[in-house]
Length: 439
Image (tube, rainbow, N blue to C red; front, side, top):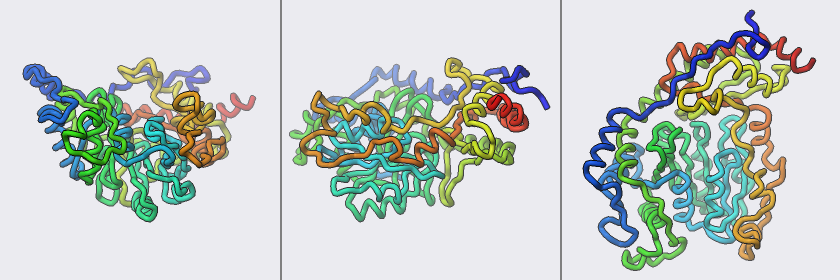
């Protein structure tokens, strides 16, 4: 049995893992074509032929809608912008509550705050790490206006019961699909399961344009509202003949022609990149699934997971060891990744600290010194942001979840074998780690 690197032995791997490079010659050629055209953007913030952007933006939106079986796709400059625009299109406003996940990037909850509504955190399902109809139902009040469902880690929430619940209470459902493009639920693409879907094209997503996002919907009225909020709605509604002025205060969320041109090429690559992730996960799990204190991600029947990260569940009691020591030992056996060397080994404990523990929610200070929207006179609720309010989320984050990114292409079988060897080496040396931890 070889000595752990953490205890003075040699690591399994010292060579950097390969970078996740999805930009190729086709992307570079597309950028060159845009530069040659001289049209880097063609948006105008007024009712005009160019209100909807230039030729690359329009083509990208059409191709995205077709790829995801949506009637409409509206490009934006980030998924955060997309969440804000979708929330505005849903009519969210002062006095409203929006049910959100506490286990996600902060923008999913802040999208409610942008329109002076109050986020209400529902607990996650302990298996999928997504919201469920059961956890959502426990948080619905007469003030609830919408639900933002996050498909976290590349998994998909159980959407049919959620949509049934939403229909019963007349709620708008926004899917946050940043980590799950090309995932499917019972044969249907994410982003078409709710009323709107929001995708990310940020640099570390499955496909990317550097920064960018897309909002999908099958509702033409919602699509129009998203387009208006994206591009200075207040300056456009009169000439466009829009009479519903709710949330028609616009932003500049526009995507440029270069990003759109890259997005068109990335869209073609997406399915293959996702397939390679799945193949890598299947191979790695075949090597490590026998480790008794680790559970592999569980995927519900009818769901195709796309593995933004590989999220494992660690059982400290079965291991006789803390998760912190286990992860520290694993990371000591492996190497960082090219282009992200400063981040260390791309592996960690948990994901993000439950959002309601942030100062924003603990102190309930939003807009101005008056504390709006939490203390706005329009709002009559009292959201629970106390520690312990979402026990499954806290257990997942503080005790169970171990995530890593080492399943991304172009990881080879040799790369994956190094990852598996590190897991197996640590598992074989648990007694030594226990002695180190417990003295």
